[in-house]
Image (tube, rainbow, N blue to C red; front, side, top):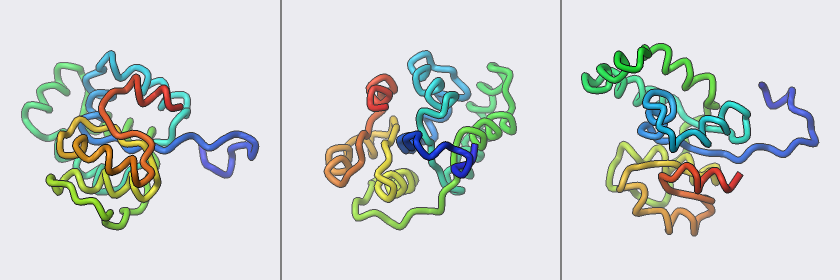
Length: 154
């Protein structure tokens, strides 16, 4: 659904950034704890934002041998999972570098996007989670890994 087709009186869904491990939990591993997030995405109660480098990272991760095995186990293909990624996410321009620096440069892009758009950030990465308090102070409504807590903010 495009923004232009949405009725003007409906509130804009809250913005969320999902790191690669969270995406795998939702679309590959079907983690039961991710059910609220899957439902929120399916019913457009949230707007998941991402950048092209985030998609490229997911494509790279899907080619890792241990992840490729899991794709086979769950009878999924990388192309199919990337199609789900594209269907449920909204492409954004790469965000400018945030004033907060992450110890893991691969995680910086998720922090930058969340801060630039004041979006919630779901991540399991310790390098991100240890920055939660500082990110909340800068306007990010939630930083964490717990789907059920995050979904109560909807």
